Amino acid sequence: MVSVQKVVGRIARRGICRGIVPLSVVAIVCSLSNSDVLRATAQDGSGSDATSNRAAHDDAVRSLPWKQMSPANRQTAQSIINNASIYRRLPTRIIDCDPDLFTFLLQHPEVVIDVWRVMGISQVALSKAPDGVYHGTDGAGTVGTVRYLFSNWGPNAQNLAVVYADGAYSGAPFPTPLKAQSVMLVRSSDVQETNGRHYVTVRIDSFVRVEQLGVELVAKTVQPWINKTADQNVIETLTFVSNFSRTAEKNPAGMQRLACRLNSVDEPTRNALVSLCFRTAERYAQRDTISRTGAILANRGEMIVDGR
Image (cartoon, rainbow, N blue to C red; front, side, top):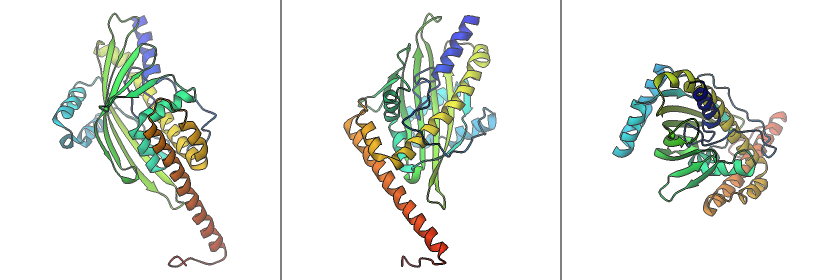
């Protein structure tokens, strides 16, 4: 029992996914560390509402777009949720981030994974199949797939997505692969403050089914690690996304050079990323100019009326 607990704990520590879209609950994306490339400090709120209580669980179930999912995808979601070993509402985060860039990264998790590879943060590999399914591996015994069961990408990061992940770990001490599946409800919204900056609020609810492990072992060994690691992972990942946006805002040419090194991302997606980074920089430059002009005029006791 002790050896099993150690391995499960190690899997949980290494394996709760560190991407906007997780590949599996047992170890697709490795640890996220600080980077010299993205140094900007994220101006994000500290989510303190992480919970596994029944009220949050029931609210998440009611919030799932059941009627909008296809019958097959609805059945997949129901199967995981009805037999979930673990439920977790991760910390709600409010991050300083361009809403269009946030949505783009949510739509293209392969961009985040490849940026981490280039930066030396992780050796996880992620590829997108023509059918829209993502296939990933951590190179240490874990493989997995992830796909959207539903997605609605609205303007200003008004997004709603349901993500399904299926993963397996092969290695000691388990004679057969340890499997897990998860369904995640991802919701986001955007608010523009009076200073012109955009702040995106992100809430994620996760339902996890772990196979081949008894209820007691899941409760005592896996769940505490998953809760702790998942909470920290979502904080670090969304801080990374905020830093990514701030870097695009201040140094789009540097982001263009970075995009050229994303060998696992197809050319249309790289081009779209570069274009979005330059648009982000342009939008914030215009806002800064307007803000500075307004401050100067205010100090002079003047005001702009009808643009004159």
